Amino acid sequence: MSARLVGINHVALEVGDLDEALAFYGQVFELRLRGRIPGMAFIDAGDQFIALSEGRGQEADPDRHFGLVVDDKAAVRAALEAAGADIVPSRGLDFRDPWGNLVQVVEYGDVQFTKTPEVLRAMGLHGLGKTPAALSELREKGVEVGA
Image (cartoon, rainbow, N blue to C red; front, side):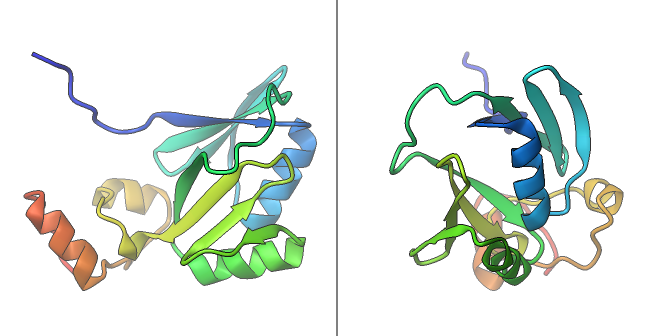
């Protein structure tokens, strides 16, 4: 029997400087610092976290990326524009941080996963719904959620 994937605990990003990374990501997202040790900072992302690791070990990859889910994609786009971020032309909202990490941003209502009411409440998020397409994908997986 194989173990089943349950979720992602965290994503680690290599950045050049922790203070600069916290400042950049703090301009784009509402950040809550979970903790910090020499060479690393940990920021909450709902019930998971992102680890920022100081020191870039390799060049930025043109295709490797990760996706973040937000409550308001339009607000992220405005914050990225205000920060002068490198927004990458795509069918969605993709950007590169100052260290070349490629990030895709999607809105919670559009994705095929859901957070429990307890997690959403703890995050101060209320009334987040799902699009019909996301609801259909969830139902296909056997997950019944309200709109």
